[in-house]
Image 1: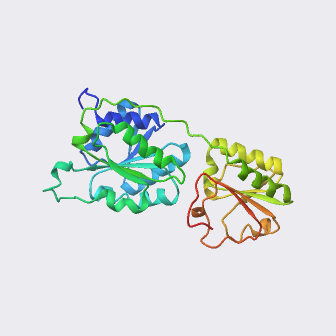
Image 2 (image 1 turned 60 degrees about the vertical axis):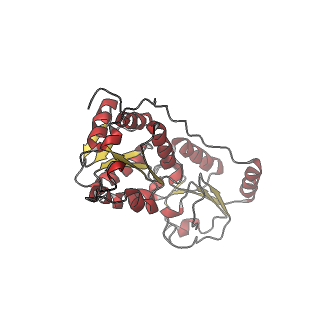
Image 3 (image 1 turned 180 degrees about the vertical axis):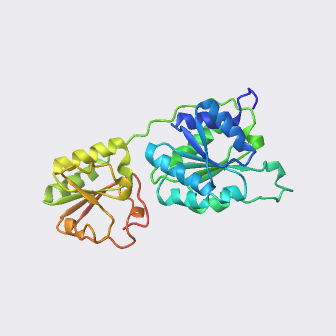
Length: 301
């Protein structure tokens, strides 16, 4: 690569600003090599993987463990298609990842057919967004996609990047991402919640994947201590409440295993619970439910 700052550098610097420390994948030449070299300049490691699906799952798990976007690079056509299973995994597990696929330059679309597939088209049903970085503000465009991936319900996003686009000079400076904050609920809603809490005797808290944010985890633990009630976590939320906490009731699946523990609860507080985490059946309990979540996911329970 030349010493000129390019779109690939803007991509790498933006990823670094979002806390990315490594990316995974199988380079197919083209833009992949430009991005890998620019990432090294930015202090981001590249992990060469055996297959695109495994690379995408590794990126998803990295996102879950770090809270920062996971990143995967693929070649064009069959390379990008081979990542679909991992992309679907990220969609279903609510993992914020970015898939960067090599692509043909748009100027060649009129005559190129070899390994040409509509990447954005086949990823659309299981992704949150897709675009090309073909404008004058590639860093801002990528940041908007990363913010989309990190917004609840979290999930995968995609960019198509040709070698020509990656090597274009880029002058836009990278800005630090805005700090994500938890907003206060409306006063009338808080009054309803307090009314439910005042009227209950045996509340139970069920903690889901949205509560993995450290600030939310602290708040959930404090609420459990205040109410002195049992707390159960889904598989994805394991660790939000310590296993040796006296109020820990183990795992919650939405099935029958935890029913004896919760059968006499007179109020359920769902903290960041996503229906995708549960066994596919209707909500089995009759007690009132107070749901605290960053997003309203449909279909619901």
